[in-house]
Image (tube, rainbow, N blue to C red; front, top):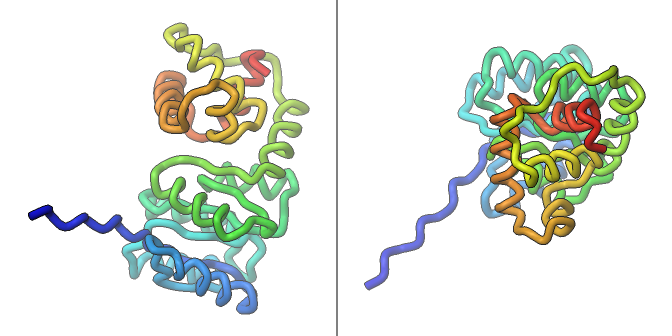
Length: 221
C-alpha cells in the first residue's frame, strides 16, 4: 500500500492596495491557486504591519502609493521587524525612484500591474523561496539606471567564481530571468538557481538588483 502524497505547504499572503476595486478581485484570484491562502487584505502600510503581526505571513503583495504609510516604508519596517516575511511589489509605477526605493527597502520582487496571474503567483512563490523576480520592464529600467549611474569598478568579484558563475552573472546583468539564462546556456532552471545561489554566496550579493550592479561594475555586460 503506497503512502499518501504529502500536500505542498500553502503560502500565506497579505494583499495590500489602497483601492478596494483592485485589492478584492486580486485577493479572490490568488485564492484560487492551490498553494496560496490570502490571509488578509490591507489598504495601507499600517494595516500591513498589523496583519503581519497577527500572522503568520509568508509574503506581502505590496502596492507602493498608499495613504498614510506607503509601500516603501512598510517594506522597510517589515525588514526590520519581520525579516522572515518576503515582499513582492505590485504597482502601476516603474520609475527609477519607485524601483530603487522598493528594492533598497528590501523588496524581493517588483512587478507592474500589467503582470498576469501566473506572473504574480510565480513571483510570490519565488519570493517565499528567497529568490527575486523582476518584471521585464523593471529589469530594463533598472539596468539602464545602473549603467548610467554606475561608477568605476569599486568591488572586485571573488577569484573563486567559476567561469560558469561569471557567465550567469553576466546574463543577470543583461536583465535575463532564470528561464532566459537556462535557454541561453542550454542548462536547466534548477542548475541556474544553483549557480546563482553559489555566486551570491561567494560575492556576498544580496539580491538580483545588486547582482546587476556588480555585473556592470565588473565589466561583464
